[in-house]
Image 1 (tube, rainbow, N blue to C red):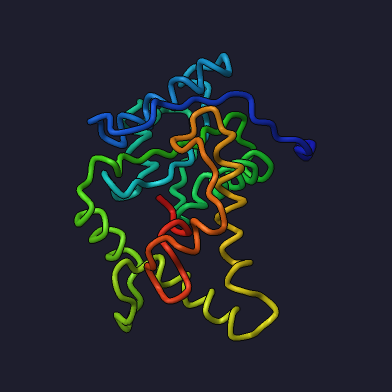
Image 2: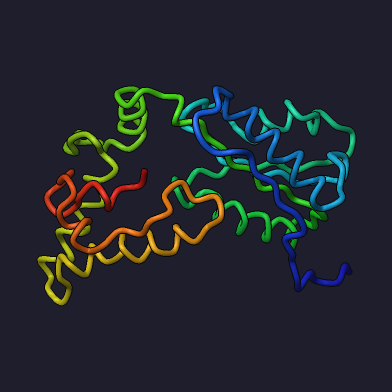
Length: 214
């Protein structure tokens, strides 16, 4: 019986430039995958697993199968396992967790986790239309933009329960901006103050602009 796998490691990474690049999400994902393989000293043929996170700008049915076909992983004589993971902004972390499971439980030796998007290529109305379309509740009760209004319902519930203030909720954005500003590839280098967050434009009853993902 094979010995259980106890340790899974990240052995390489790759990323593209950020910004409006006039390239499709698939092209960006392929570049990131190629760079990650080079970083790890691996070749495409060494992969026996692929996890892909679908994009909003260029979505495909069964994203992982589509990407695997584009890069030559499929079709292939040797078995390769592919998974599409869509958990919104948590997609990359969910993908890493799935990769760990694939190594431990499905005996994969090398799994690539790939995510990419090109939303800056979309005009704001089209971006909102696509985001709203994917997140609207069955009763169509959430106004646009649906995602902030959905989270706002949780924020309002927390405020009504007591024990937390509006300022404390806003501090989440303040602290996250301080962490984000330290990243070498950060698009925004200055952290937000609590006053800036609270005075930014209101998007939903308990959510302002600087508390929304951008």
